[in-house]
Structures are given as C-alpha cells and as structure tokens.
Length: 208
Image (cartoon, rainbow, N blue to C red):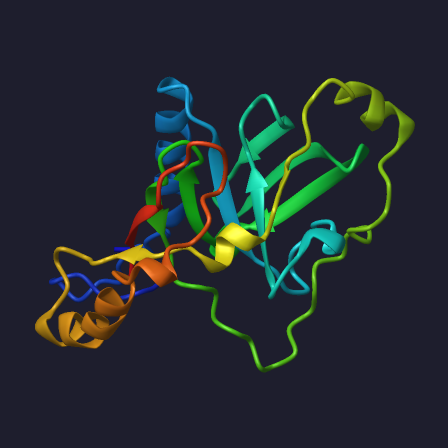
C-alpha cells in the first residue's frame, strides 16, 4: 500500500508519528532490482507545473524517462524528489520529478515493475516549483560532465499502452470494477507497442 503522510493516535491516546510514503522505497528497490539483473529502469511520470522535464518530450501530460546509471548523471532517488542530469536530443538537461508524480517504474526488457496512482490535483493554486524552465539548456560544465551518456528520453507512446496488473489483494468491489478493463485488455487489437526492442508487455502491480 502506498501510504501517504498522515497522522493518528496510538492505543494509549498519544499522537502517533506520521508515516512516510512507501513509494520512494519501492522505486529505489525496483531500480536496484533492474540494475542488479542487467535491466534498464524506466519511470513513467505525470507532468504538471511541479515537474521539471523537457516539455517537447511530453505526451498527454506524461513522459517516460530512462533512469539507468548509463543514461543519467548525479542520480538521486530521494524520498521527496528524483533528480538527475541527462541528455535529451543531444542537449544536457537537469531533471526534477516529485516522487508522487511517478506513476510507474518498470524494466524496459520485460515490462516487469509496479504502477502507482497519479498525484492528487491541488485546486487551491499551490505554488509551483521555482526552478529553471524545463526547456532551458544546461551549463557548459554540465554538458561536459554527461556528454558520454545516452539520451534519457523514451518515446512517449508506450506510456499510453501501459496495463496495470490486477492487485491480488484487491477487495471484491475493486475486482468488480477492474474486471471490464482486464477483459478488454485481452483483445489482440489492444496490444500496445513495447517500450523497446524485445520488450515484453508491462505487467505492473498497482499500489494504492
């Protein structure tokens, strides 16, 4: 379960310590699993004003990023943000992604991974991240530091083809609500393009 920060009380009536989200820990664990097994970790990101990515690679408010060590520099998988430097179309960029905007992480080669619910939309007009424009080029020093890395951008088309695997611990109500989707996804006409050569269909477990 993807636990958001919350508060409650212990059995003795004292205030309980707020728990942190499990999402960053799961992301790091799956990133390590991909790396240890020679797979390429991809993350699908919901893009809004809080995300700093090259907007020219965004499709339907989503972008897929290669977060493998070969494609990134200074990768930091933090509890609040994922930050790294990478090349996009030959240009060096600095990427900042709030962890709650990561909607999936999976291996390019076989599609195994995990999906997460999208972030809640704040209708109160919360302030956006004060960061450089996503389309701005990085400094010459940054370009030199990652000139040898491959592009981190991944075609956005596979994002629309992601299928969420049924949650084995879902309630009966959840199972009923997801049954039509599972049925429709079995049609050969709905088979999405894979995220890369030899890649299998993503089999993602959604974390609620």
